[in-house]
Image (cartoon, rainbow, N blue to C red):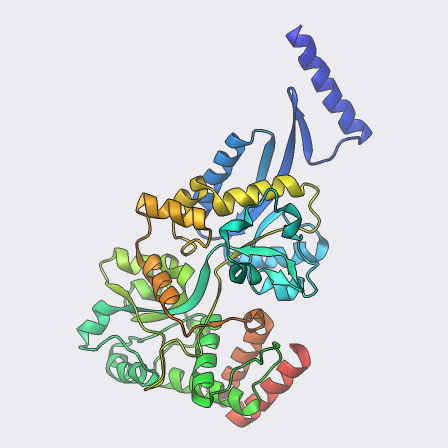
Length: 420
């Protein structure tokens, strides 16, 4: 009799497939329907390994749900996601960048409204200010995993070698460069986005003018942009930082970069190798001009966020997976502080009980949480086109293709035309 039942179930499954009467995301397995959903994320091998393990645990807890995974490093993930968002083929549950809310959901309709699944997704673990980061036009599009801020990581071993203290002011880095450059060592380094935000902070501190108004509109004029371009040119000329086009993360481990600007969430990814080689990596104060409070002009944002596709056919199952990723003890123990200190109260409690709140990333997170001067980052400042335009303008000055005045005027026109 059992063999006959199995045969009937198999036949039913085949007939369902031929007639098109079942969802393509549902599979009949033995005596139950298995709902298939998709999950996508970016990150290094370690993140991929623990996320895959978490998915296995979720499927074990929910045998009626099958999770198909898609993942890659950031650059590939970003490029693929842009195509998927435009073609409505994105994953049911996806890790998204904070800036994507402005790029893909300006009116709040780009992602699923998570308030519709509150019965499944426990949002009580998050404060309203935390959830506000995920709202667009009043719609809850995403939930932040942890908070993030550009942070200064210093190889104290190298600084000690030159008899230098950990820098605090802008001038301190130029003084360090004057000592280190004879050996080809840079006191600081960073990728394009990090350097863009660093020069933006400098200009805000020097002028007392925020880049954006409270309503998100552009507040800088060509004069403030010129200050940014001139500062970048001066840092490159004085060997404070390498040009962003020549940035090589391996130079951190080699001791060629004695410091770096990077997100809290990238602490291990960028500086873990140097720490493993015996270098002492410390968290410096947020750079400030002399006499100014550390943290002024610096901004915090969600490290990464989770969202559900507006096109999902399975919002309930997707919400179940999202709740597991954000709030479950299983995921909390696997993830640790790799993405920063979790904002979820239950996830953080799990890490406290397990003694897992430690390490370089945890130290960077504490520095961020303890600093009351950090502002709330507007997603606009992470616009990739805006950053590319800034670097292009910087190169015009660095290579003497334009004066700072000419380049800043051109950059201002570009921002006004294409990004406001």
